[in-house]
Structure formats: C-alpha cells, structure tokens
Image 1 (cartoon, rainbow, N blue to C red):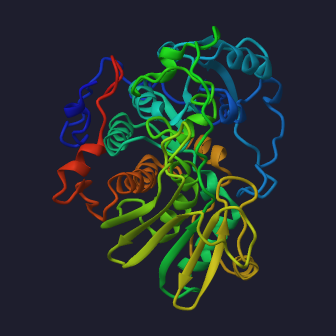
Image 2: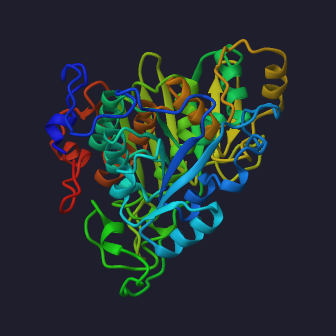
Length: 445
C-alpha cells in the first residue's frame, strides 16, 4: 500500500478504489440482513481476544448485556458466530477453536483470513503495533472491523486508518469500551446538561509503569511465528517478557500506561468534552524514564494538554492524585465552575461515578447523550444499520493521538505546539519525524 495514495482524502480520490478487492457491500453482497447471523473472524485470540469469541453453543441463546454497560437487561445481542480464527501462537489458536466449538476455520496468517468470503467482520486484538495495517487491510477486503485500543502506534497510521474506513465504507469500532459503560454515560449526561458549569480541567490519574527485571533473550517457542508477531515493528530478539501481555511496556509495541489505560480514560474525556474530531494545541510532558530493566516506556510521567475553543486542560498523571470521592486505581476528575465529578477506570464493568450524577441521570436525560447498549453490541448494530459506532475510527485516532503525543513530548522533554487540523508539530522538524515509522520488510503503509 502506497503511503501517498492512502493518505489522500476519499473525496479527492473521486470514489475510486486503490486496490483490486471491491468490498462486497458495494456489490450488494455485503453485510447480513438483520435476521441473519453475523459471521465473525478473529485476529489475535490470546487474552483480550478470547473475550470477543462467539461460540456456536451460544448461537440463538438469550445473552444478558455486558455488566456495567448500557443494556436494560431485556434486549438480546444480535445473532453472531465466530467462523474463522487467526493467531501466530498455535496454542492460542487451538484453545480458541475449542472454546468456539463446531468447525471454525483456523489460520496462522491474517491475510488468509481476510481473503475468506465467509467472514463479514473481524475482531482485531493483536498487540498494538499491528492494529493499523490489519484494520486498513480488513477495510480493503470489504470487512467491518472491531479493533482493540489503542487504535494505532503513530499519527500517520491513525490518519491512514480513518481514510481507509471512509473510502471503503467500513464500520470500525475501536475497543475503548468505557463509552459504553453506564457510569460514563451518566457523567456525560450530567456535564452536558450544565450541572458542572463550564469544565476547565480534567485530571487523570494512574499508577506507574513497570521497569521490568532483566531476563535473557531466547529462541522463540516452536508454536509461535515470531517473525510475523514482530511484523511492521523494528526487529527485537525474542523474549518472553517482550511478547504476550508484556509488549505494552515497549514503545515500539505498546507505549506504556498512557497508551494502555490512557486510551480508556482519555477516551471518556474526549467523548464528554467533544474533542473526537480535534486535538490539543500544546503538549507538555515530564517524568522519569526507566533507568534499569528491560522496558523503555515512562515509569512516571505527567502530561498537560491545552485545548482551545473551548479552553480547557487535560492532565495525564502517573501516578497522580486519586479521587477523594471514589476509590479506584485509576480514573479522572472533571473540574467545573460549579463543582466536580469522578469517573473511575473506564475499561470494564467497574467503571463508577458519583452518586449525585447517578441520581440526576435517573431523573433527567437533559444532556441528550446517545446511550450504547454495550460496546460489542453497538458495533454489531452498526454493522447492520451502517451508522457510526460510539467509538468510530476518527474518535479512536484522536484518542490514540493524545497517547502518542504524550510519549513524543516525554521523549523530547520539552513543550510542543500542535496543529490539530494538519496534525503536525509547529516549527519542530525533530518532533515531526516521530509522527511516522518506516515499517519493516513488506509491512508498511
């Protein structure tokens, strides 16, 4: 895929396709009718990816809404079935096939899954460094996409993902599921109804990242295709503490706490504050880099983002100061002219907010905030209706941009001025060189 072509707007391209594969929805052969079963393919099925599996045994059964999310306990999730599975780890693949039951197709190479005409939509739950290319190629292949957060590793990747989703008409949901939590909806409703007055500051807190004890590199186990696992990232010798789960603490693969949980906490802030289509005008980051150990993401850091029109400040602090109202390991406090409120976590059923917010929302939906039935449910609904999901690709890119810009500021250790329209640093060539990466081998934009 050519970078210069993909980054052009779909309008400028006049609706022409860059690639040979025309999405099936364009040919009238696309997504299933509302009464039909949605056929899902899964890429990355260790850890988080397992939670997206839709086993054959559950097909047609009443499924309760996800705890803590937006369902009312009465509706049913749309019929969906996992028909294809892909992972570079054979053990993950075998385990997922057993969980799904029946005879799902299994693949080691995700490109073969994307060629599968029986797959309507894909779930991508790989390490972060693969999200962009897989999402773009899935859109190219005519699939809708549920991609785990954070959306991307670089600003260039995120913008290319937005362009691909728009050009190919794909529904893309980014997996910052906090927006589909009841507490987040209650907080959004409260703030947009004016109950806090004008919000001037949002303070996020989180605990520090690990430094990681030294562990010798080794040969990859035979069940893992390690070359494909590394994919577009710079080559790194295999180490068990660099791969499953632990990849999060390496900048080239994950990006630390700010790109892990920050993509949840700041997603809610972006949603509430209405910045899903824009970004900050400055980024000021400081903190402590790892001095020992095997990881290179910030151990402690504080990033201050300034927004304009309206003017407000977002602060990411690890560890930061927890809310005094609600006890949680991470979350955010929203400060307004008329008070404050807390939204904890933002990534699961434990998301909570203040009692005054709950009481208000039970009496008044004055903020007119859309309410999600659940993050996966919202995605599946939108596959059928072709509407934008609650965490659509542009929003996912903008939230991931906050995480990326924070890391760039931390790396350079100086305040940076940002143009959120053109998505470039102002008068800073060194910083702008960190907005993209070359890729490795065949894996590049």
